[in-house]
Length: 357
Image 1 (cartoon, rainbow, N blue to C red):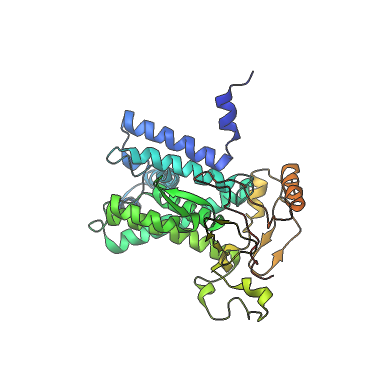
Image 2 (image 1 turned 45 degrees about the vertical axis):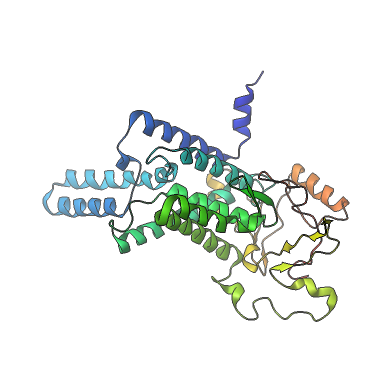
């Protein structure tokens, strides 16, 4: 008889499982064994010190010393990964470290799962993490180099990546109902703004910048996914000409009405349409599929304007969900059907006109 705990852990999608377990282990090691932070964390000052050491050894050291220093420096790049495993709440220790780990697991799991944006596709989600993580590290190093250590105490890529994942999740499930801080009911669309306010109040300017870096990285990913330039959706004519027929009134982007909306107590729920950079799918490169021994026909590259490649392979589980949606005349597309963060019974209802209909 299998252990239910082990079974539940195995049911977590692979990327989310790695980050969750690794973060817990790193937190346990830091709190109990107090390893040198430099062995897990990297910043611009550390890179400058290593560069200065390489230059010094190159000029004055032997060949063996040069090879040794360069090899250790290259091996030390693992810290670009372990930096993402250190929650900001560990310094000083607080409950926020546990909460950040939990929220990271929750939002990441919801994105990576079969019901989420990436539909359980391991390589595509891993590629998303690689691209956004790289952008986060480059942005942090740039800010650190420009502002200097006196302006920022430190930055935490874990918090950056959490903000990035939360932002992408909020864009993929805009109309889900959640409770900010467990008490304020809002739509998922407004969660990044709520997080900015909370971080500013609780963590100050440093936490605010960390959150902004994550949102910026997630926004650039969506632009790359949809093959559009930043702020493209704000340019005149980005969505083409509007149809003047009343039946196409729903082409407007942003807040609009829903046909056959439910009314509760006289209040009519508003539906938030997808922006142009919310559309598309960024497929991982083929070499990553081969490296992971994963079928290459499980997703297809799409942009806001075109479809590239053959239709993806649909699993039996996804096919069953699709057939269920097709049998429901009120369904407007594949959704999760529930919300982990609040009242989700009406989060996805309504038949608004979609962009491009």
